[in-house]
Length: 95
Image 1 (tube, rainbow, N blue to C red):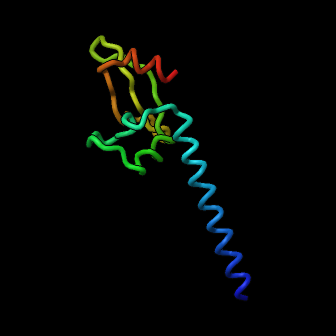
Image 2 (cartoon, rainbow, N blue to C red):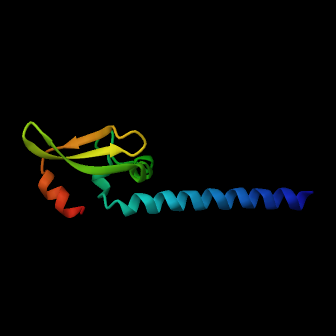
Image 3 (cartoon, rainbow, N blue to C red):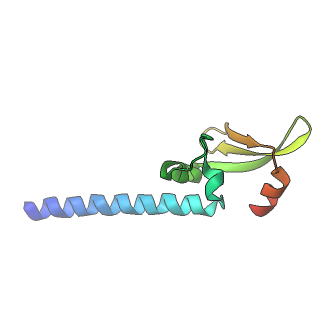
């Protein structure tokens, strides 16, 4: 019985590690810089915000006649952040 419990815990731990690895790979694959992943704009990117990057996409939008980059949530398509500061530059480095 003890061996089954240890095996079960090992399987759960392995699944958790695989999940974290896949989320990390998903975050890296979007090509965001660490500073860009500060989704709540508090001036600091946390590990949670890093993992949230795997669920956030990027698209070009026009706001008040200016080209901007909109970061949006994949789950509902709503904007997480719109950056118009140097949108053209950001669009080129992340495409």
